[in-house]
Image (cartoon, rainbow over all chains, first blue to last red; front, side, top):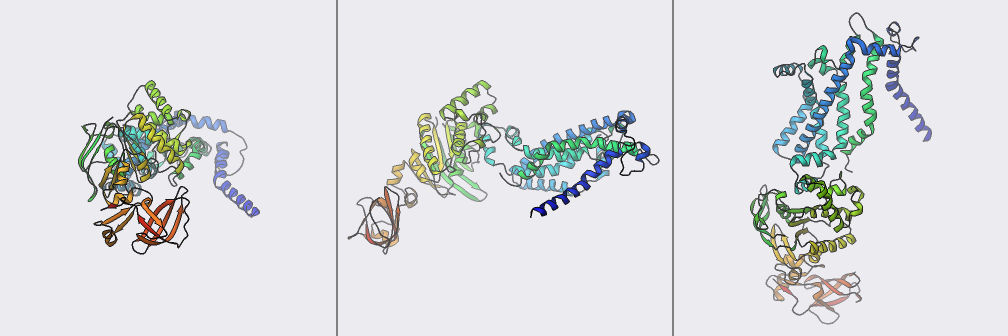
Length: 274
Length: 326
């Protein structure tokens, strides 16, 4: 039994290494190479380490565009997360606590938002109509709309585990609906809120396609779109491209490492009451 | 201090009527217990008084003021829930002071009131703990503290002791009775346990199927039950109820009731002959289960040390003037 466990452990470690670690090493090595060396994209040690020079050059490209992209992406992420948490929790609370025909219909709409694929062109047309196209707050609203279905679903099932007696005790204590929500219910949703923050923040920060469609314009660049700076039809600066990949991977990685334990707690705490 | 008057109170869920016209006057300062089997509507009635449940028709007055359509917080009531319903993310101090903090009272006032309540309930050492670090009895006391701090004119208790073990329940019964004596506030208490009703109440309201069966002081209900339901529900072990021919033979129109302690067992002649089926020794008393050929099963409560064998033939006779006839 013991040898078997060790063998299985070693095999899993090897698979984990190949899938998760080797790509990361490739990115790190290529990001440290000179342009000529990097052009062949192979798994060798660089002959000359130019990690720092590549880093400086990547950041400085196009008048420090990467920094602007960090700023834009952070604004979109933070704005969308705040909206998702507040609205998702509120909608989930009402949908769970009030079981009427209306709320059942609304819940179906939430599920439909998860199932029906988004239509890009009509959305752009709508955004143009309300002057939100090519704006950061328009992008924030888009991300809230895309994330809300999943968020409401998670919150609704989690709120079902919070006894209704707590709401009623707060009503007797003289709480208004908003007081009850913000002072009793929302603090109790912390585990699932952390899960939502991490999952959605990583997804929104790393989003490539939606900013590409809805947020054109050099001043609106987001981190994933900066990757285009180093790739074109005739010239590709592979070493800088990989350096860029490395730089924009760091923030989500930090978020994930920091919240890792709470995520697992949040994922399971809705499933089993306890 | 306030009295509570319910007038022709009704409640329907969809087409189903669960409270079928309740008229009741609870005097100011009274400890009133609603008791009945599960599903009789006692909790619903309490929730209607609290304002958590809407009233379908009828009228609720608290302290002479019509509160039928008032918000719970405007009724001058406080409620203790069966599950305690403590806020798990707040400390004991914050739990007790939550209502005051919602009302935006000054911090110093909240602290003063919470400290006073904690002294009354001996919770001073636990004020900075979270509810999950407390035992069942302590949680119950915090829940009571949360209601006291509101300084209500009526306390509502929804089966507050049913999650506690037997020893703690007995202790909390005494604590609650003491608390009532100390505060002198009107209290309405819901339970399915007739022992709690008998031991704590000034006035017992027996509910059955959404209607009041009888209202009265504990011993009044025990000695003079108005209906066979009350006779069977109040008192443990249950009253012996004979129906049909057997009851008519004893002079009753429909039902003849005799309490187990009023049944005299002997080896000689007696009213009903029967076989001992089962003997329960409680120490001070012994409960004897008889199977009578004439009237079916009978319960008798006798002195603790009397000897009975299973299968023994004995006779049972009702004590003079103790029977209840319906």
